[in-house]
Image (cartoon, rainbow, N blue to C red; front, side):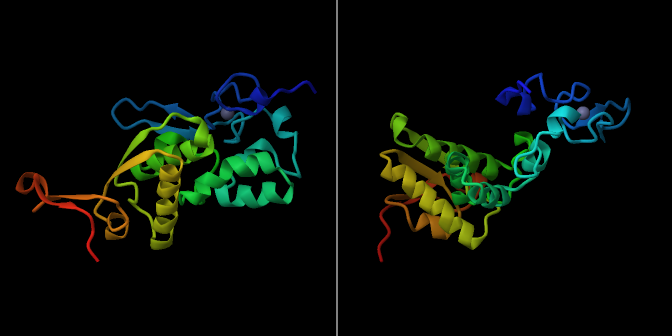
Amino acid sequence: MGYKPKHFSFNVDGGRCDECKGEGVINVSMQFMADIELECEVCKGTRFKSEILEVKFDEKSISDILHMTVDEALAFFKDNNEEKIVTKLKPLQEVGLGYLQLGQSSSTLSGGEAQRVKLASFLVKGVTTDKTLFIFDEPSTGLHFHDIQKLLKSLQALIDLGHSVIVIEHQPDIIKCADYIIDIGPEAGKHGGEVVFAGTLRI
Ligand SMILES: [Zn+2]
C-alpha cells in the first residue's frame, strides 16, 4: 500500500490521527480549572488512522503493539524471530523497565525511570559512543530488590564498555558496590554538607 515506517509513527504526520496529532487525547482548556484530557473521538484513543490500524503483524496493529509492555513485546517479537527488535528492547528490560508500555509518553516517566531509559539507550549504542562520565541521581528510586540487581548489572555494563559512573544514592545495596565512596552528611539538607567518609568499603 506504499506505507513507509513514518506512517506507523505518532510523532509525524502521515499515519497518525489528524484530529489529535497522534496523542490519542484532546486537551480541553477549562477557564477556571485545570485542563482536562478527553479521549479523541476520531481515533478513539488509538492514535492512528483506521487504514493504518488495518495493517496487522501477527494479528496486532501498531496500536496493539504500542499498548504492550516491554516484557510483553519482547515475548511477542521473540516468537516472531524479530531479532533486531528484541536486541533494541532487551536493554530496557535489563534496567528494570520491563513494565513500561512501548507507547508511554516520556513526560509521564518518573525521574528514576527517565534516567534508566537513558541508561538503556547507551547500552544499545554500546561501544560506538565516546567514553562518557555518567552521573545518576538516585536511579534506584521506586525499584524492587531484584530490579536493583538488574540496575547494578547495567551500571557495571557501562563500566565494562570503558565509561565512568558516579551515582548519588541512599540505597546501601548500590553504595556497597562502588569502587570509591564519598559519604556526605552527617544529616540531610542544612544539617549536612560535610564529607563524613571517603574511601573504599572495608569488609
Ligand atoms: Zn485521534
